[in-house]
Length: 355
Image 1: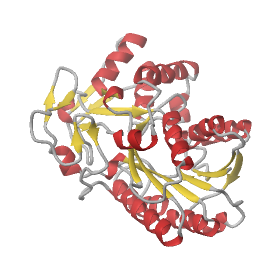
Image 2: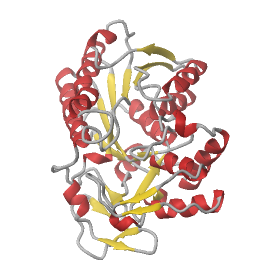
Image 3: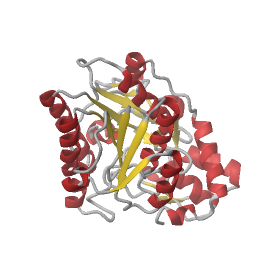
């Protein structure tokens, strides 16, 4: 079997490549990346050591697909993945759409030409911000909790947010590019008869992630705490009670492996892939974990809300568990310990992440 991974030198792309090579006997992996993000050169060396066939290219350029070898599957892990992209940061709104949406046409044309299946890595940020903001939450001592004693919107339960939760706008410019990508990919698969799976990923986290305040929050927070960098609880009264769940990319690779192996052509094609309630934690709880490992370091309080921030986002992956027998094998405690060990062994990691 041959697989092409776009964005192969990113944290997710490289980690998925490593995991799939361990899982699938005789697998040949090809990876393409434009090496634009700080730190990506480090992963290029790792990929070559694994035996990945690396191609330096930009998926926004159709010509960069011309000489790529035919593959059986494509894993699309290339994206500008910050929810603030196009509004704040180093990418304009036009660049965001070129990165996340226009480039997908080249990927889909490649799949069409070679009858390759597509595994599209989407995001939990396709969900409606007003609907997320309206969730009934109870502020506890150090986190927000979903109040299941009150009426809940369609698509959310005590287990978290499922695939049927509202995607009504606004969802952010970033989220809109990913939601549109889902629709286009599914239409291409239907029109040109190749399989498409869409996985709406929660927060992916693990050792070696290039963390910044806008993405890779678990890695950023642990590295910044260890280095005694200035840190801030932003929004929600500056308390750090906002909650996210974490998923290790090795667990995501296990789901991708099962989707590759299934012969089912119809039925549900969009799934949620997140760490769930068992892997959920607030920033305040993460700070307490870091205090216990590295010694006290208090973040500043900044109650000013930012665009697109939400107080609680925990993913319900029960559909994927039921349909593919998928289980999450990396508990949050192991993910945090892995990041912390890597941070201790790499004192310049934040600088390598572009900070």
